[in-house]
Structures are given as structure tokens and as C-alpha cells.
Image (cartoon, rainbow, N blue to C red; front, side, top):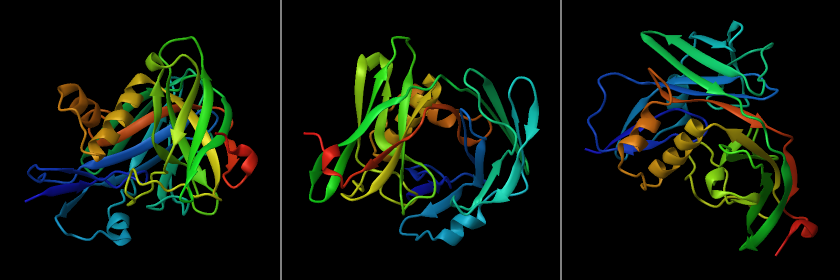
Amino acid sequence: MRKCYLLILPVLLLACERVEPPKSPILVVEGWIESGAAPVVLLSESLPVLDQQEIVSRDLVNNVAKWAKVTVNDGTRTEVLTGMADADYFPPYIYTSGTMKGEVGKTYTLTVEYKDYKATATTTIPAPVPIDRVFVREVKDSMVTAVCAFTDPPASGNCYKVFTRTVSKDKHYHPSALAMASDEFLDGYTELFLYSTQRLMDYIFQTNIHQGDSLWIKLCTMDRKAYEYWNNFEATLTGNMLNTPNSRYVLDNMMQGASGYWIGYGVDKPKFLDTSTPAQLTQ
């Protein structure tokens, strides 16, 4: 029997493997802290799914992990995050802070205690890199390929991922499929192509930016571990996972004691793109 583990992360997690079902659910963590912004953590327990089984929103909401103790330490102090309903996310429940804000260069340790679970992870916020410009590269059959252009600084070790928010469709930013890069392959001016926004339960790589959409585009810097996680995760979803111990390690060990991730992002000001504006169409 084909077994799927539905890891309830509002970004995109839907991973299927031909393995025996786990004896108990897995704690799933989706957490991040951006420069200048409060930490955000979403928690759930994995949901086993059989072939041909339909998943509805109620199934996801029922597996949200409420009443957990979630703490973040920034090297100086430890803060207990507050759990609260938030309709901007789905499932609509997050853990966050009203006082802690991410700072470039700081290291943040996340600890989650829930039922018999205890999960930890550490991340650092790298310096942000500004977006030079955003524009439309191509329009085909009313579908748009957009571009996020920036200049990779000479310092080594920079890694990037683009997030987008479509006005009137999204309440928060979602990852843009394949729009990531490591500076070992970059040299100065760089363009990342944006084909789609990854939303929960959508096919991950289906082109879904339409001509006429208004987008906010955000470029995030991240450390090498975070880059390898996202890179291998997307490969897993497309069935192109490299069958190497390192790939499995990155996916299974971003968090200790749970599945998911805890990532620090360096973020400069997002850029706005109106895809219906002819002046922003560049051949």
C-alpha cells in the first residue's frame, strides 16, 4: 500500500513515500524569524493518508498542536511565544511574540514542548540583500514569468529564496517554486525567475501567476543549512530527490525531535509588481 504523510504546513508540505506507516504521529514544525519581524511558529501532528483518500480542511485543523510551550532564545534572553488564532494563516493558529524582533547576525534557538515531544533547532539571521528591480520577463497564454533581480555581494556563503504575496489572493507570503540560489553559482547581478506561488494543497510547480496579478516580492537571505533544506524538499516533491545520505539527513534533521524547519531570514524591503503594466514587461 502506498503511504503518504501529510505534514500540515501552510507553505506546501505533502510528502509521499513507500514506507511502513509510523506507529505514532510526528510533530511538524514550520517556524521562521525575519530581520525586523517577530518569530512565527506553526505546529501540527502528521496526518497519515491512504491512496485515494480525500483530505479536507477540517482534517488539517484537527491536527493543529495547540497548548504547546514554544520558546525562543536569542543568546541573551528566552521568550515564551504566545499561541493565538490567526486567520491570515491556514491552519489558522500560530505562536508568536509581541516583543521579540529578529536581528541580523543573531542566533536563535527554538524549543517546542508538546505532549511527549521535545523539539529544538537553531538558526542565524544573515545580512539582507536588497532587490534591484522586479519585472515581467514573459507573458504566454495569460500566464506570467516574473523576475526578481538583485546583486550578489562578493562575500561568500550567501543563499537566497524568493517569497511572493498576490494581492487579493494571499494574506501572507508563500515560497515561489524553484526561485532560490546559492552564491557558489552566482557572480554579481542575478535574476531569479518566478513561475508560481506555492500554496497549501496546490500542485507545487503549476504556473499560477496570471497577467494582471499584483504581487509583492520578497528576497530572503538564509544560511546554507536552510538552503539545502528547501532545495532538497522541492526535489522530494517532484520525485527528483537525490538518493544520497546527505539529502535524507537534511530533510529529516533540520529539526531535532520533529519534522519541518526553523529558519532565520534576512529581509530587505519587498518590491511591488503590477503584471498588467506594459512598462514592466522586458523582453
